[in-house]
Length: 255
Image 1: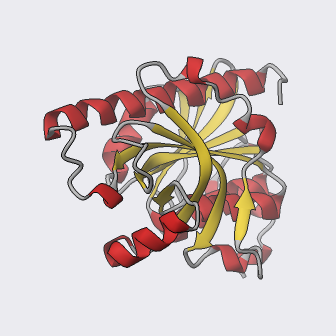
Image 2: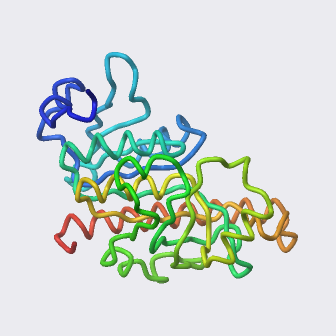
């Protein structure tokens, strides 16, 4: 069965050369799988497209960044995040970084700000299959400590716990208020799963998310749509810049 597939079996099934196994995996949580894949593809050279005979894996690559093999995948929700993290966990990738957007749950956070996740509540469905009985999973503290305001110019950074859900349209006022009252500063759809699979395979883990909006504030009347969109773009660029700074630091042995 799929759970029992070994590293060598996956390499053979996907035709991945062993010397291309990435040290770092970057996931982008998004519904827009292909457009984000195309955008991130431009950051790499010597690209190996990861596919499979039956098309299970799409929008996944292994590329070179400053002489380091880095994996990238566009994912949406817990199922996709678990599959890609599982694959690279079996292969021996040592660090996974979750990126994407989130919804803020406190009034002090606005669109475009960055959330650096310190821990995440498993409110989705996949984490339980890797870490039964575990409700909350921590990020790798040494990586969280590397995230400083100086790396994220023009947007504010917030460190704290988040809630991961797998049902975006089931978020109502009562859920948002409950999560906020429990101390969670944001909500996303992938981080808990990515962290659970990473913990299962002994991978280091980090999640950096830009804030799309603040559900607790409704329409967030302090900013017009144009201003919010500009802040989101700035926030996403700051996330990308920070991720590649972390990768470079990791490459140089500062783990």
